[in-house]
Amino acid sequence: MFVIKSGAATAILLAAGVAGVCAIGGTRAAPTDEQVRTKKDDKATEEGEKLKGTWVLMTEEDQGRKLPEEKLQERFRLVIEGDRWTLKETKGPEKKEWKVRLDATKRPRQGDFTYLFGNNKGKVSFAIYELKGDFLKLCVAEPGEIRPTKFEGKGKNSLLLFKRSQSKPSDKGEGKPN
Image (tube, rainbow, N blue to C red; front, top):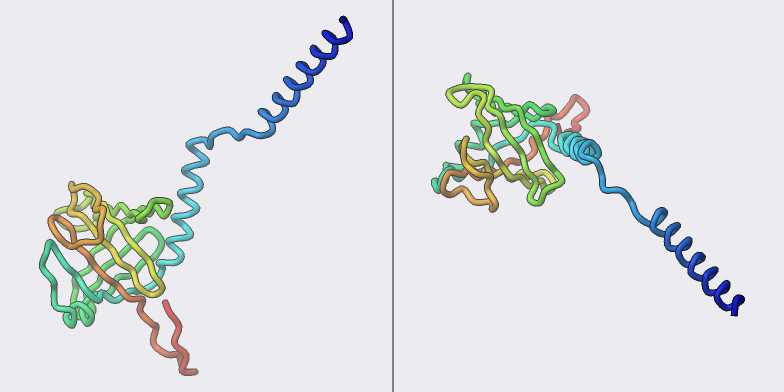
């Protein structure tokens, strides 16, 4: 009888030991806040590199009003350099700048645009964006409004579509995207 009890005890201890080893080796600790921030920062940096360059404004729907495409295409350029986004007039003095924080881990992707000019200086507009090939779709809320959930230029939102600009051909006749 002692042998059976001893065997049962050994089996119980062995099972407990295996379970303990599996529990220790088989589980992972939840990521720390710093690890989550680092992953977001890495993804934002990667996303910033993809967006870097000059973009031509193709269409804009501002609070339900569509603006003439031909005027936009010949008038506005968006220059993205890291976290600094600048909208420039091709033939004019107007220049609007934002400091942008991207979050490419969200779906749809998100951006927070801090105004560096005008009456809204220091205020933040929340946005969503989508990058497909050489096209950048951006839906931005007015400062103080909630982040858009759909790509619509209605209500207090503006919907913009940009196309990546091609640099001027070099002496060799080659054109490269900016």
